[in-house]
Amino acid sequence: MKKYLAMSLSIGIVAGLWFFTASKLNLMPWPAYIGWSVFFWEGANFEAVKRGFPAIVLGAVLGFITFYCIGLLPDLNTVNLIFASLMVCLLAFTMAFAQNIKIFQVASATFIGASHYFALRGHAVYLDDPLMAFLTAAFVTSIGLILGVISVWLGGVINKTVVKYEDY
Image 1 (cartoon, helix red, strand yellow):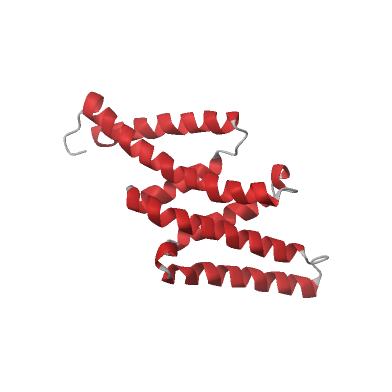
Image 2 (tube, rainbow, N blue to C red):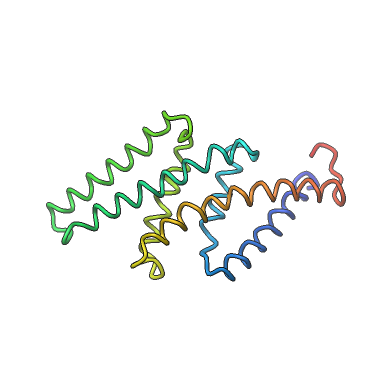
């Protein structure tokens, strides 16, 4: 139980502080939590930030472009639905293939950035504001990477001063 106590306390504290801060700034807090998971999935270190950030931003950019192109269609009749499906196909291919480029090697983060853009554009707050949806998808999601750094640091402080688990 002691093994995960300091990190669990740290994550709980940072998550609550982020929720409060994001709410006060009128930001949607949830994308950062998912960006935070990228940090831990990629190794919970500064390298995880360096790998995750470009991929998240690329995903948001590609989501923005895809959403824009699909938005040019007057309606989604069968012919236009086929075109929209091909656009999504191209988006998915591009995101997966981009992992061949070193700075975009985290394909899951790229998909997260694009998914956040699509989800945000469907949210009432962002329906008519594609730029804010992009900024939220790219940068609020990436704040999660920084929250990860903070939570690891704070977990170390809590462990050293309170929990004192030796193998931390």
